[in-house]
Amino acid sequence: MIGAIADDFTGATDVAVALRRRGIPTVLFFGLPPEAAEPPGHDAVVIALKTRTAPRADAVAQSLAALGRLRSRGVRQVYVKYCSTFDSTAEGNIGPVLDALAGAMDVPLVAMTPSSPEHGRTQYNGYLFVGDVLLAESHMRHHPLTPMTDSYLPRLMEGQSAHRAGVVTLAQVRAGAMGRRLAELRAEGVRYALVDAVDDADLVTAGRALAGAPLVAGAAGLAGGLAAAHARSGHDDPPAPAPQGAAAVLAGSCSARTLEQVAAMIEAGRPAYRLDALADQDPGSLARDALAWYDTLDVEAGAPLVYASAEPSVLRRVQEIVGAERSAAILESALGRVAQGLVERGVTRVVSAGGETSGAIVSALGVPGGLIGVEAARGVPWIHTASGLALLLKSGNFGDAGLLVDASR
Image (cartoon, rainbow, N blue to C red; front, side, top):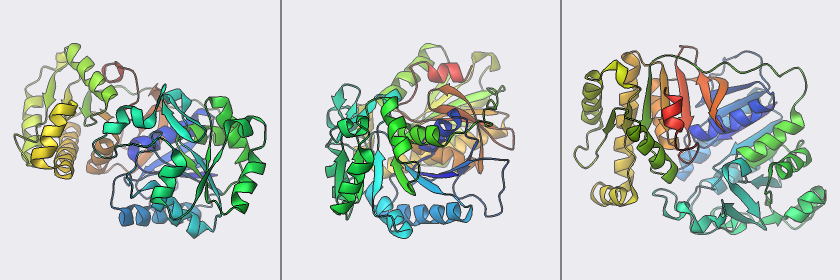
């Protein structure tokens, strides 16, 4: 049984579907699962936290609590899911969380990689690439919350951890020497082993080598490799079909891909309403105005879009005037309230773009979790809740330009 702890809600759906894709029945909880909760038969549990940009002490405390809940369920392997672009600041939270979990589990060496080739993230000689460029030369260099200005993963890890980090090279992975290299790093007192992988076959090889490791970390790619090692016959039931019903799209991510997807919604003629934190800093009134606009729409106009996503120049101006953290909090709260109002008005399909946005929406709706359904895009599954509400939680960079249009038809 695998238990995953994810640092944001869209990352949780990504890792959950990586497990489910290999035929492993997977249940996803938003926040700590109730102690008495016993969902239908499953071999994997994913706990979605919202700790990527939380204060370090809070991120550690929440992650330790999640570990305790997984241990109480008899989980044999714990997987810590972080973003494939290693989103973090110089203070954490990847390093502090893993330091705490490894200490609590008495694990001397943790193998990890953010490599996720299907999303264009690969690790080579310890360096992280986004497509054909190094991480620090990609769009992530200008991320508003976690700007990534270094591409060498051991250096990034050592900067936010109390322990040393090393590399398992691609040559060692492909030569079947991964076990020997991990033993060498452990003997040298290294706590974190960053594993090179440039295609899915490398991740499957790494997954087999790590099938018995008590604690592993990385993006959804390595989780899929572990799932391949753990998968067994008899669990190949198809996921629930794509849901039907009234839909709405809520977007808060300012990533380049989400901006393309927002533009595609507008170009498709979908009704669109922008939340402006410069015009109003009260999330309650922002939400009320958006819902009043929604109430005027013709139902034949197609699923609408309410968005806070903004081009870099606009985003910088908002952050300069309102403040980065305050503006983010205002807009996330507003989007959560809009989601509540939409569901009250009969919306049964909510499509969300952005990790922080998805966390705010799920929290506002009080959704405890759900079963993983079919994917609208690679790594972006529908989540079916007990109440009949269906959620599609999209990480900012995921999906093609038409994803929001297609998912909300």
